[in-house]
Length: 382
Image 1: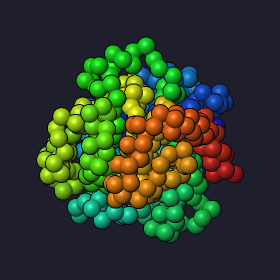
Image 2: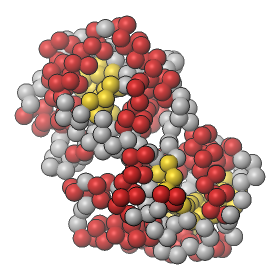
Image 3: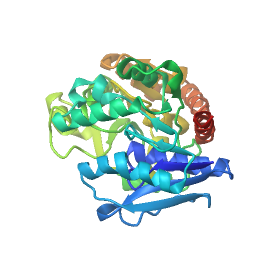
C-alpha cells in the first residue's frame, strides 16, 4: 500500500497536529515494512529543508513541494497541491491528519478530526475568514471515505455537528511518546534545576487560552496553598500569552486579582519537548481543569510518568484519565484543592495513584494507534 500524508504541520512538531503526524508516520513505517509512506510537505520560507529529527524507516519519504506560508497558501495546499500530489504519486490512500480535507481527491481519503472546538465553543469561532474556513472544512469532511477521531467525546461532537453517519466516524486514540515513563533519568535533576524548580511542586503544563481554565488552577492552589504552600509550590509551564486578553488571560494578572502570592508560584515559560518528562516526573501532582479536550495529551503524559492527575470531567478527559486519576467538575476549585492537599501530604495515597496512573497510560500506545489506522486504510480501499 502506498500512503500519501498531508504534511503541512510536519515542521511544526510542537503543535498538536505536527506531533500527531510525526508520531503516526514513524509508527506506521516501523510496524509495516510493506507500506510505502510519502509525506507531502510544503517548502519555502520558514518551511525550507523539510528534514526530520525522527529516525524514520526507509519506507517513509518526505516529498517537498514549493508553497507559500500565508493562510491562502495553506488553503491552496490543502485543496489543490496535496490532492494533485496524491495523483502524481499513484497513492492508494490519502490521509489528511487534521481537519482540512480537500473537496476532491483522486484516491480514497481519510481525515483525522481531533476536535470541533470552533463549532463547540463560541469564543473559538474567530472572525469571518476563520468561520468561512470552518464551514469549508466542515463541508469537505462529508466527502471523506472515513473520519478518524481521538475519543468518543469527539466522535459524539462530529456526529452531532457534521451530520455524518456513525459507520463513517471511527475512534483511534493517541498515545504518549515512549520517552514518557516513571523511571528517573540521569539528567532529570539537571533539567529541573535549569528551570529553577523547587524540590516538590504541583504542575500545570499546557496552553493559556480560556478553555484551559487557568483561573481554576490558581483558585485550586489558593485553597491548597495554606496547607502545602511552604513545602509544595505551584509550577506553571508553557509559553505565556503575548498579551493579556479575555481569550488568553495572562496568569500574572490572574494571580494579582486572586491574591495568590508570587513567591508560591513559579512561571517557567516554554518547556522543550525533550525536557517535559523530567518536569512531569518531578511533580507531586498534575492539575488540568480544561473545559474541553478532543483527547488531552498532557494528562496522559503525566500519568505515563507516574504523576497523579487531578483534572476536570469534561470532554474526553474521563476516557483518557479513567479511574486512575481524580476527575471533578471544571469549576470545582475547592474540590481540586482538597485533592492536591491529600496528594501532597498522604504518601500512601499518592503512591497508589501513581501506580494506577502508569497502568492507565500503558493502555495507550502509538503501535496500537498505527495498527488501528492501518485497518482504516485497508477498509477504505475495499
